[in-house]
Image 1 (tube, one colour):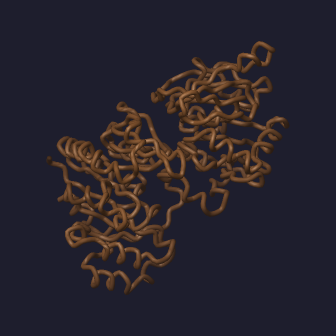
Image 2 (cartoon, helix red, strand yellow):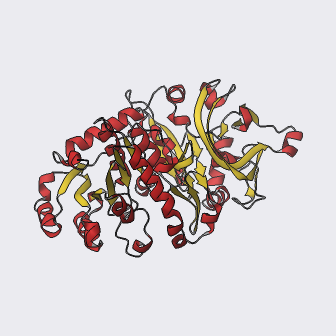
Image 3 (cartoon, helix red, strand yellow):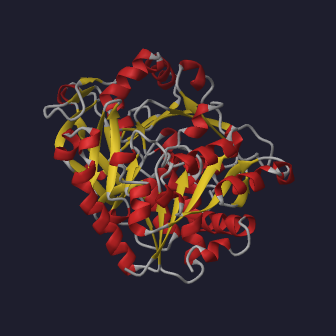
Length: 490
């Protein structure tokens, strides 16, 4: 095993671990080093398709930042929450029903050998492995069954950075408290503290960094300014939802009217990261909708993916959003359903294998979805047929995307026999449109990540991922203390 291991730990969820890990992957790759990301266990419904199945979206982007091919070893264990007390377990890219049925604490020792082997293999093949932790390493109730934070750090003898979100307040207490709760062998691995999302004059922090170093022996090695428009999706996409419902948008060059797109944010929303490009399009105002007021005045309503379609559909009805979506559609408003959202647009959900649940759909497309035991996980390239309505500009366009779903969707037999037909606008049931043309359902994820689709729909493009990754690397190069990043891999 030759790779040096650099690990990013956080005092809390949302402190900036994923963002900083991605930046470090590109920074070290630009030094001519062979780099791979690693996160032993991720809990997220944002996932991407790789050769070995699926991994968390954050590790997918980190691999691209490292100029590496994303693969299952980079995130050997992925937990996809379906309910508050149950997650689907993905081991090395594949659904593992046996592990999914085990209690949380019962999984650790079962999966540790595969996690350690994946890390060993990546270390043997690379110069640097940049490791991301999860949540906080100081959750003392979980320390004994830890397989993602300090157990990994000790196993790899990783050089660790501990990052805290100073914008939340209490950052110095978070840093000190986390350090204080760790056993001495684990404290010894921490090489520096990082203050993230700082606003204002950094000189006003004195004398706190010096005092913290006197207490712990660990320096503050970076104070990273708040940066809203870095262009990288949040790992779970939810932190920015917890404040205002409207996301900051790029200003209109011509001062024209913004187009408002409301994305319904149900509890088990998945693959939210695919909407990141919409945040960087001029004239687009993106909102997260949790109640009818949030979709008032929207030009488009998007039903995104869901890890529990029937449950999220029941939640949507309880909020009264079903009536608002139906009224919006009846008035000719644009409605887009992606994956689970497509399934919701149909007439019914049928679940013979106990995968998701039965239930009536929204009835905006004459379709029925049957949940199959086998999960479809694959990259796809497919072309739209002729489209009408607000989607007409996508007619005959070829789209590259990915599928992750259990459901298989087809026309409702009785409705089709009665003459109520859905228009298949992509081969193999990948996309459907209604007669009026304003409702489109699509199984492929990634529409807004396709530059051609963005140009067709909005006449604009978002920053490329390459430019985003380089911007992240430039940012940490500017704001870390001189020599720190080089010393971590020396």
